Length: 250
Length: 323
Picture 1 (cartoon, rainbow over the protein chains, first blue to last red):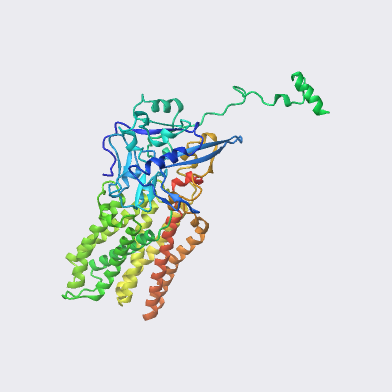
Picture 2 (cartoon, one colour):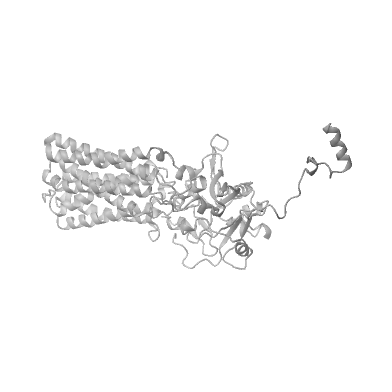
């Protein structure tokens, strides 16, 4: 059924992505591909992978943006993006077959590939580009929040997190229940003013983004000056350095 | 948006087919189209309805042409509670019922008034509802502001009635039904003018520069200043860019709009006006057929632009600054 759940999901499993920490290494996308090409939506088909224009199914992509303020201050922000598992997921309601659905128990948005007709309308309805078309299999695929990993009792408890979260070397991604105000992720969102992407689209995303922290203003916590001894004035340098300086300046 | 041939054909052909049926049913109901009450095969209604049914059926089949699993297309009927695509599928199938009742009565029993006439009017109404559901597939998508507006819905309905009326004029002229063609002359003229006005308003609307979403709202980084893409996720185009990042139209949009306006509206208006007022016999028929061909070709350009000019919100993550 492609109507959204009548009662709001009790749990809202989602990701919190810290744009202050992400270094844009693409490890999350790589491990996502690695896990999911053998998981529920397997395979994540590649087209022409070794050719000039490689293409393929990816659930996670890392963009890099530059911001430029009016005063000319610029900033580079690495920006990982995957399905936001929206509360009002437009990809679910447009689906004509019932293949797209949002789970009542945890809010995860999934595709039943057995009844998907591959009409691509869900990818048109999603503002975030979270929907992927598998040209070989003729069906739509998307981030599953690693539903086959996070509940997998064959894995040690610490591994029961989405592949992108498990692998992030900098800890820029957190996973948890965003419906529970006392969860670590909810506290993180509250403390760092986590926000929604494109709130004006009315999708009510579950995943939240944490903004980059303000830049240091240059007066506090300043790094020690390097090359102090290379200054023109050598008066304060130790004797050996002054001696070398004298010889070399001659 | 990528202007797929299958979807351009689907929307223009079903629009023209349903529009043609609307006019055939309306003219039948009012007793303007011939029916001799004799049992047997009637060629004229058969050909007229075959054009309408043919456009609708090939259009609907074409829409299944871009599916990954066409054999599962029947499943698309199930989600009419939430999905406009599903509603369109259901309406298209249901509309065939009253359409077929008029068809069977008219072609095999020589009747197009009374019961079949009423069935035809029900079918005509349902045909317009089906065209409306088609428009809603596009108009319901918030991600594409160029579609998510009232002019999309009005445009689809007016283009359908207009192209249907032009086709009805051409068919009645082919069969030498000059009186009926005369009845259609005024509606055709009005619809060609209204159609052009609606398209001009639509084009002005989508180019008014109002933004629904921006690169700043898409990334949430607006507080830091103007946001621009520094590096794409992939070195080559991915599915999202191939499907939703179509750019060619913007380069030629001005020219294409002129072509669509002249072929689809202005030329048919002039040709039909000249034919009805100054020409007779074969020359009149040929000019009317030329007008119909120009109108349909113009609508293909119009529909190509409808898809190609529409910017999708996801492009904000790939260098677009606003949609």
